[in-house]
Length: 310
Length: 313
Image 1 (cartoon, each protein chain N blue to C red):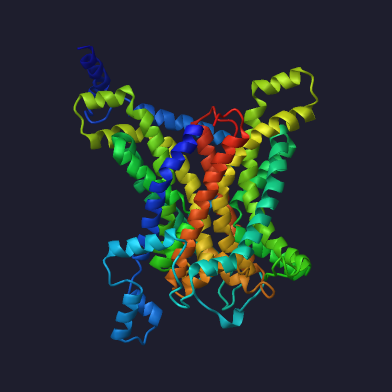
Image 2 (image 1 turned 45 degrees about the vertical axis):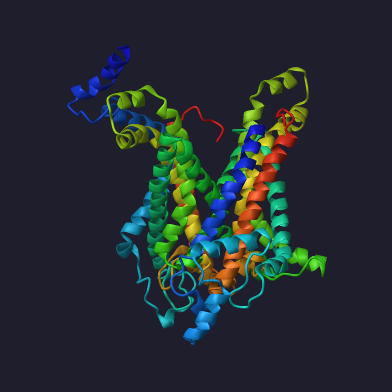
C-alpha cells in the first residue's frame, strides 16, 4: 500500500490550495520560474535587442493606419517611381503608392502569417506528438512515419506544392507554411513527452484514475512547454521568410495587398529605374526574421543555462 | 548509429508509401474540374468525358492511385497536362542547369562555412568570433532572393561586371557559364553557409573541450596541429549530418533563385507549370525532388557511419 501513500502525497498540496484539478507543481512556482527565465533572458543584450525589434514591428502592425503617412493602396499617377524624399521616406512604386506606408502595412501580413501558421503547426504538431508518445506502439509508428514523409519534402517545395493546389492567397499561405512546421513541433513534443510519461507525477495522476486526455493536457503538456516556445519563436522567423518567398514567387499575398515579398517581387523588374522598391522590403524582412531569431535563441539560453555552444 | 541506419532502411518503404499518398492526395484537393484546365474554357461535355477517360479519372480513386504508383515505380513521373510531354523527359532536360547551380552553390557554401566555423570555434569569444557569428546570424535572416537582387543591382546593373541573368550551358561556353553562374551561386551559397558555419562552430566548441584535445596539447603539439589535425576532423563529422538536411534548403532555394536570375532549371519548370495550372508537371517534379532528398539523406547517414571509424557497421 506504499504506492497509495505516495499518490496521496502528490495530490495533497493541491488540495490545500483549494484547486483539486491543479497539480502541486503549478501555481506560484510557475510565476517564479517565469521571472527567473526573464531575468536570464534580460542578461543577453542581443536577445533584448531582438525583442525591441519585434515590439517595434508589432507596434507598426497594430497602429499601421495611424503611423503610415499615406494610403498604401492609393495610386498617385503624378508620383510614379519617385526616389526617397522627405514626403516619401522610401520613395514610391510603379503606380505612385508610398513605399514606406506599404511596408508598414506589410508588417501586418508578415506577422499574421508568421504567428497563425506557427499556431496551426503548434496545435496540430503538439497534439500529434503527445498522442504518439502517450499511446506508443502502432499509433506512434503511424504518426511518426507520416511525419517522416512530410519531412521528406524540402520545406519550401512542400509549401509551393500546397500553394499551387490551394491557389494563391494569404490564408492558404498560412495553411501551407503551417503544414511544413508540423513535424518539428510533433517531434520535439514527443521526445519530451516520452520521458515525462515515466515520471512519478504522471504515474500518480494515473493512479488516482485521471482520464488519458486529462493526463495528456494537464500533466504532460505543461511540462514540455519550454522547447515548444523556443521552437515557436524560431518558427515565426522562418515562417516570415517563407511567406516572403511565396509572395515573391506570386504564390502568397495577391495585389494590391502589401506584402514584403510581393513588393520585393515588383521591385525586381524596376532595378534599373527604381532600385529602392526592391531594397527596402528586403531590409524589413531581414529585421523581422533577425528579431524573432534573436528572441528564440535568447529564450533557449534562458530556459537552459547549461547550453553554451549555440 | 548502425542500428539507426538499419532502422532508416526498414522504415524507408513505409515513408515512401506515405509520401506517395501525400503527393497523390494533395493533387485531388484542386478545386474545379481538372479536365477543364486541360481543355480550356470552351470544352464540350464529350471532350471532357474523353479526356477524363484518357487521364483515368473515371476509375475509382484507389485504382487511380494504384496505376499512378505502378507508373512511378517504373520511372514514369506522369505527363504534362498541357503539352502532354513526359515529365521525366522535361526533368532530364532541365536537370543540368539546376545541378550546375546546386553544385556551385554547395561548393561556395562549404568553402565559406567550414573555414569560418573553424576560425570562430577556435577563437571563440574573441572579436574574430564575434564578427563571424554576427555575419552568420545576419545571413540566416537574409532572404536569398533579396540578396540575389542586391547582387544584380550592384554587380550587374551598377558596375556591369557580370550579366544580370540568364543561363549558358557549361559545355557550350565555360567562361560565359561561370560568369552567369557566379551571382546565383553566391546568393544561394551564402544562404547555405550561414547555418552551416554555426554548426561547424558549435561542433568545434564541443570537440575542443574533449579529453583527447587536452592530451594533444599536453603532448606539446603546436596549436595549429591540434586544431587542424585533431579538432577539425572530428568537428566535421557533426556537420556532415546537417549537410543532408541543408540539401533540402538547397532544393527549395534553387526554385526561388532560378526565378530571380531567370535560370532555366527545375525550379522555373515547376513555377511556370503552376502558372499554367499544369498539375501533371507540378506533381512529377515535387515527387522527383522529394525522392532525391530522401536518397541524399540516406546517403549522408551511411556516409556518416563510413567516415567515423568509431561507429561499427
